[in-house]
Length: 246
Length: 320
Image (cartoon, rainbow over all chains, first blue to last red; front, side):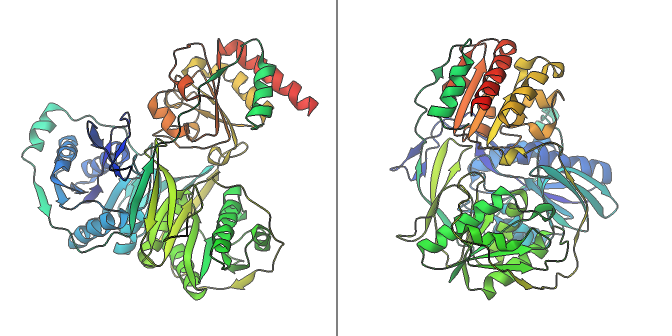
């Protein structure tokens, strides 16, 4: 089984978020970038487990500039066999999806995995778009995946429940917590990653449909109001009369 | 032109998020002097009720059928209904299923898509709308350049608003073709309100010391009428079920009230809860980072404070 895993580069969770150019652009100065955790911990690792059990290999794809190679090498160190980088700015979800789908159409992947969302834009759009362009079924928010022959049995996380379903043949999957356990690259993996193929390809024609106009940082909390631990009636009064939430 | 809203009916019932989408769509429609049309697929409660939320027309597709979820089939039905009713803006819920079809529909309809919006769009000049990004650490305003536009509405961003009366749904039948996704089972979690929809949430962290002590948390949640949640270490230790884990790798919520008990407030946890309207933190460590994100704080031993708070809530409920 050959699996394509789409990986995205995001600021580290602990990064301070700020903006420049009159709040129209993200300020990446001094920010540490990481592989999007949902892509790395769940999508990539489950893909590796499946190919370890069933044969085949995992290819990772990223849409972005050469500075993204650092996260691509990390994916190779964790165990992907080879990588593709589409050399263009990820202007919006459609541009990313169109480029991933263009590559995937030229190959014959059995499955395409990605994380359920990125931790920066929290959009959750790319997987559905890739599935539509490829005319494939889409299993989103997957917390469990079992493969038996050509049949995949899938558990999806829904609001207030779970859905179990089956798909025969190729499909696109977005990974949620539970699908796999995070793997740390070992020294051998890191050394091997340096010689694994990373192919840089040119983008296909696709126009961005959505653009950021401005950013704002939410106003800081006015400060915590401390309540005497022996006077919980006062806390209830504040929640009712002041905060008006109960 | 018209505004089309797809209203989900999981298990044959509308949820609060569906009424939020109906309200949102009718407000967008009235700002553009047009009408809001709702699409309902498969079995549901009386779809005419959507008229109460300002919807002018309800199209109920295959109303007698249990149409199990398959993003390709739902996309085809919604795209066809959208086109046949002169749609120019499509509104969906920001739910697992809503997000599974929003991207597909964007491709199918050549539309720009923004997911998780939490304000109404500004249509005075072009079309811009805001959402929370970087796990709640910033707000981004986006513009869509395409003629057709798709938005998914973040839960608890708008209150359902009654502005009309029941209407008679128009029933239509659309051939769905073969399902490539065969749904075997849909399991509902036991208990009350699902966490993503809860307005009041009581959440517990490592400070509880073990699952045997959870009872006081459950008592408080019952007294308030709140859903229960937990931090990652509590879920990882199996003290509480995984679906209660809120935070960056769990689920993100935005209730009106979030009471964090014995949770230090690591940035990964805050990422899942910092869109809550009011945050109460109960922690014995006055230096816990969570106090910086809190509106109200109580410094002290949770094993003493939580039962007192429960009693205070009960006294308040008796008086009101």
